[in-house]
Amino acid sequence: MAFSLQEIKLPILPFSMLIIISILGRSLHASDPPLTLDYYAPTCPSVFEIVKKEMECEVISDPRSAALIVRLHFHDCFVQGCDGSVLLDDTITLQGEKKASTNINSLDGFKIIDRIKNKIESECPGIVSCADILTIAARDAVLLVGGPYWDVPVGRKDSKTASFELAASNIPTADEGLLSIITKFLYQGLSVTDLVALSGAHTIGMAHCANFRARIYGDFETTSDRSPVSETYLNNLKSMCPATGGGDNNISAMDYVTPNLFDNSFYHLLLKGDGLLNSDQELYSSILGLETKNLVIKYAHDPIAFFHQFSDSMVKMGNITNPDSFVDGEIRTNCRFVNT
Image (tube, rainbow, N blue to C red):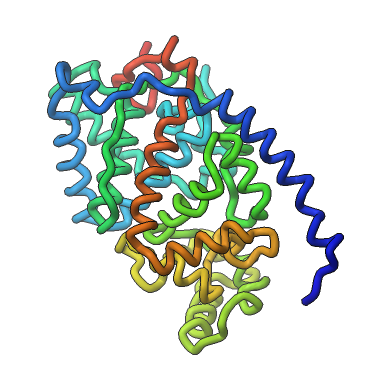
């Protein structure tokens, strides 16, 4: 399909607006947090080892646990910064984030964090924040399923608040367009490169039928290379996710090749046009995504470059801070509730 020069210039205004949003986002969210690698060295030197051992048990028991924890961390950081707000339950005086539209059918793994917190509290009571536990656990989750290692700066405090509204508006959705997703990342101080690299975590993710129904009955056949493998994949998806009549909670791996291994297979699927979520396939197939397309190609052909960038982007995302929590935050005794 041919496009006129005027048509091609249309995205210029939105991208210029994104640059402005990016600047505002950095001033609001991406400060230089007082985080260090040795924050707990004098007070709880065993914290990293405790988290690692607990995550090893969880991933050995169920490899899908790794994706649950990474997703929890992502959803936490995109709302008020990485402050553990996503872990809070609803109470009479506080509305949590768990029942927001972007979270209610996609988040799990809370009990894993509870178990790790209980172990740490028995060793170092009142010292380690739930926000730090989640951040460390996300790193270990990736490592345990074959992904890269990175050092985790720590010293976060737990928030005393949550935001149902921001959870509904800040977190990208499965059917969202590319420019909208880029906007949400820029607002957090994260770049287009961070977006493409962090999306690679979907190599170990699962998705509900409700989140990919529009894709498989929409433009999947348009983007797909129509190979026998792709045709079989699509038929299997349609059999477990009917166009009508239920099945919303049926799940499928977002990487059907190596669903329990953290690798760059996700990007190869995008090159084939077989991305399960519209928001993922847009990274490669959108006419507005020249930069994202080139990055998808790069990470598909260079797994080392993907691992390096994913590590850097996870640290960057983990440094998104809630300034209020550093002033008025706490170390929760129970990750589900603000201290009384």
